[in-house]
Each structure stands twice: as C-alpha cells, then as structure tokens.
Image (cartoon, rainbow, N blue to C red; front, side, top):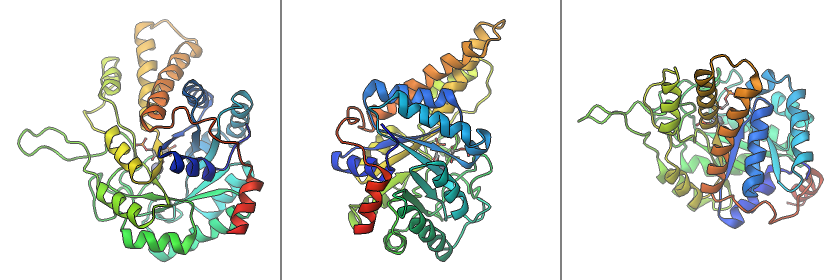
Length: 346
Ligand code: G3H
Ligand code: 13P
Ligand code: ZN
C-alpha cells in the first residue's frame, strides 16, 4: 500500500473510537520494528521523523526506508509524518520528500525554543495548511507548550509548568483560524523520560505527572470532530528503566504517562498519540543486556536485532492498548490526490 494521508488514518480512528500511536524513527531497525509490530496486530500506524531524525538520516535514507516499508507491508495503512516542523520551509521540504503529513509547531518560534505568540502561530500554521492541503497533505498544529527539551527542541519549561497549557477557548479559535486537521494540546505532558518533578510531600517519593485531562474533555466537547494529539505520551515503564540500570545504566527513578490516561484521552477525541522515549528505552535496555551478557560480541546485528525485537514489543503493546489492533483492513487507502479533491470541495 502506498503511504496514505494521515488525515484518513485519523478519520478512520475517529469512526472506530480508537487512537493511533505515532512512533518516531531515525534508522532502519526502528522502521522495521514499527512495521513488524503493525503487521503482527494488523494495525494502521503513523511513522514520524523529527528534524533531528531527518538530519541524522540525511533525508534520503529515511525516504527510501519508508518506501521499502510500503513495499514490504502492502496491507498496512502507513502515514509518514514530520514531527515538530519548526517553519513553513521545513514543512515544504518534508512534503517534497513525500511525507503525507506535517506538523507545523508554531507554538515555538523557528529556533524551536522561544515560545511564540498566538498571531505568529496562526500565521505560520495557516501558511502550511494552504501549501499542504493543495497537495492533499495533512497538517497538525500545536497550541500551548509542552515541557522539556529533546535534541534541542522545546521551550525548556519545567515538566510541571502549568502556565502554558492549552486554553479551550483559544483552541476553538485556533482551529477556525488555521484549518488544521489535527491539534496537539498541551495538558502537562513533556518530552523525554523525566516528565515530572512532583514528589509526595509525605514520603518524598517521585509522583507521576499531573495531567489536565479536563482540558481534553472540554476541547472535545466543543469540537468533537477535531482530531486531538497527545505528545510526550511515553509511559516510561519501570521494568525498562530497571533493565537499563541492571546492565550498567544510570537512570533516575521516573514516571511517564499511564496508559489508562491515554485511553481516557482516546475516549475524548485523542486520535494520535506520540511515543518515542519508550522505544528508545526498550532498544537501549536490549543493547545493554546483550553487551553485558556477551562482552566479546562485536557484530552490530547481534545487539541491534534484539533491540529491534524489544522495540517491536512496545509497538505491539501500544497499538493494542490504544485500540488500533485489527483495523488495518477496515478501509481502502486514499491517495494524496483523493485527499486534495476532498479539501478542494470543503
Ligand atoms: O519531539 C520529540 C521526539 O522525541 C523526537 O526527538 O528530536 O530527539 O528526534 P528528537
Ligand atoms: P515521548 O518523549 O514521551 O516519547 O514523546 C514523544 C513525542 O511527543 C514526539 O513528538
Ligand atoms: Zn512531541
């Protein structure tokens, strides 16, 4: 199956009442793990690349790996999405490479660090919507700002900062002003493994991040047709952190976003759920384990293979718990041309 517009995957997820994970990729093993997982549970899937990933893979490697994925998995609807595009120019580059979806993250300025104002966000997002929809490409926008910094991207807000959460009034206005297909909301999640600095005042133990789920409820109540996106949605499983530490790692005890909260979001309009950190943890734990158990090993396939298997497990788990399992063959794939015609009509 050729790559499909992400809008189709999200529309179908809305019809079926499930969420679709968007997994980040940088290399071949990650793409293989995602597709092997999607194939195993017959799910549609969103594969996404950050600007860092595009740089790391020199663009063309990633593009051809994606083409290989479509050739090898003809029954799986796959959308190729740009994660956190920092400018209309970056989005244009991704569209020219063949991405079927882009995120214009105008919540931050082009430097990917400075918090932008509403007018800037609307201006750049609107520009991308016009350019992308002309080509049938889906657009995700973001309103509000997430915590944390990943690979230089992020405002560096403390994981527990609540001053930049998405305002439901503004969200309604933003969707009307820009025409985005999907809206990333800031509800207290943040990128990376350390999502909360909250501690139990009595025991001093770390606590999971406090999420403003009521904002999702309210945004969904007002705009039930808008596809919501949760970023920073890794669950940071304790067993993966423990495995990393058992084999020479040094990670602090931490909490991610509980899967039950993501499921609650899915019941209230969340259709795309971004997961990167959990896959990074799974791969790292597997690599550490192999190198610890077989210190004489030097064939990369001997540790990258297990890393790929470990990531596939996370992929299968998330596809299943977000409800995407079994939905790959629900629909015939749309082309970008089909989607372009739909945008032109509306
Ligand atoms: O946006 C956050 C993702 O985890 C991508 O991270 O920019 O390090 O590739 P990255
Ligand atoms: P995590 O760091 O929680 O996996 O979030 C990834 C993400 O939101 C990518 O855009
Ligand atoms: Zn993100």
